[in-house]
Image (cartoon, rainbow, N blue to C red):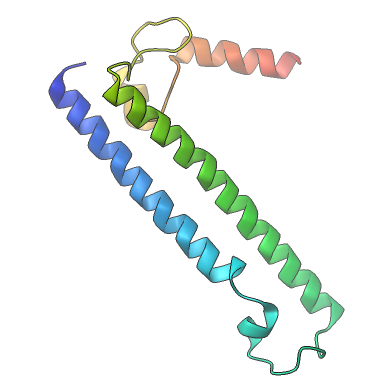
Length: 127
């Protein structure tokens, strides 16, 4: 991979990282830091209906799930940035072959070439 490609992929990864951090912050602020009392503006903490409490719990659980998923993606992007700095970016971690540029454009944090990724997915389905 030449320096121009490296700079292009680094810029792409850093932009995706910035977007994810912003998204995680939004999820935290919008749902995880607020209580139902804060959201509804109700002054009494005893007037909640059980259905309202259930809805609040479900919304918090969804926010946690999305934040967790974003956190895992952020980890993979950070790992891709490490590979970029170690000059191993764009190489499959399984077979060592180059990862197709089109794949890296679509999934810039890809660790494996298509062939190895398909084999990994097949093993997961079998077990």
